[in-house]
Image 1 (cartoon, rainbow, N blue to C red):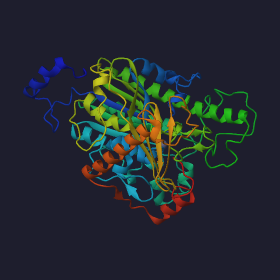
Image 2 (tube, rainbow, N blue to C red):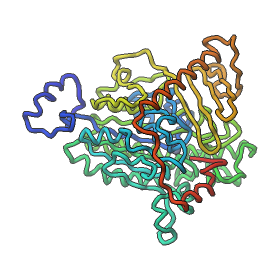
Image 3 (cartoon, helix red, strand yellow):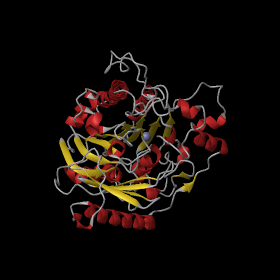
Image 4 (tube, rainbow, N blue to C red):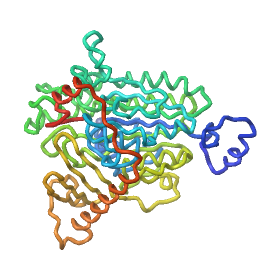
Length: 485
Ligand SMILES: [Zn+2]
């Protein structure tokens, strides 16, 4: 199979005469590229070699990035799993898809999600997930012919039927422990072995969860980056154990970060295996291979840990790498891009029609080398859960943050303060390039969100979550107080 190019248009036109199968849109699906969308949960780009990290955490991802396109400033809609993946699949900000809190909401069936577009176009669609918030109960399974739960669970016999949700104690706790990458990979392989033989293209969503805490990579990755440590800390219960905090000695922090990096190296190995599978089947040339994340995580950057707590860059800056030989030329893009741009981009690269309700923009013209300037649209990120009510507007050189509970706001000059350590007040004299300019962009973005809400097919649906699971969520801090994921 060849990727679709202008020269193939003739074959697209004559194909119906040859009796090839058609998708609903009347176009030949065999000529469309496969999509492999890898979402590495909690992956900070600044811990990848291709984004400048000194430690060799990511040789496979780096090799893919070197042959593809890398977006240096890709920004998530949210600092936690559920709304971020809902935005990945709907290409609208969190306020518009509405799935901003796990206890109350699930994604409405009325959105045309990214997997649904590919399913409608005749693709075989599959998703493999290992984190509890990817569960279909939250509406994220829409459009997948097969959607496989690879969440770490407690042994059979110790749980009841509710635990099929993966959200109830002790399953919720267990979901952070252990290793799930190999289970996800086994399910990918099972799917791919069949899909590679089929005539129709496939869309595979591979959610890798091990980089998310706990930071307990399997050997040899557990000692790869800090073999000599003999202190008391492990990566277990990173988020829940109050003994792990920003006040611990620097040497112990280094160890915990080495374990996080070990998880990245272990996950990089899985990415390499998937790439190898595609290559061995001769499908690498006709596959759009995407590596991204849902959000990052704080490693004591601002005196805290984990995520779903702030909108600082360590929680919302994510990687985006797109590999599609022959169509996407090797390139690095410094301009800012947004999670909500991914859906329109993948539809564009596969020749699928755009979806009118999306609020992102295709990056296709940049990837194909047709356009080199014009990246840098402002990115909106939101956190409306676990007692926070924050929204930020980020550009390449500034970020404006509003706390909607008290109306307070601050901005950061990312050009001089990339670590966001010096909050600034908006001054009328600051000019367009300073806080006032950011505030104006923020106000425009808020207007866009209101207009997006008016155009959205529906708000979030009410989640039908059993009381027992709601109690478990509350007990684990998911429904107020300190959260995670
Ligand atoms: Zn996540």
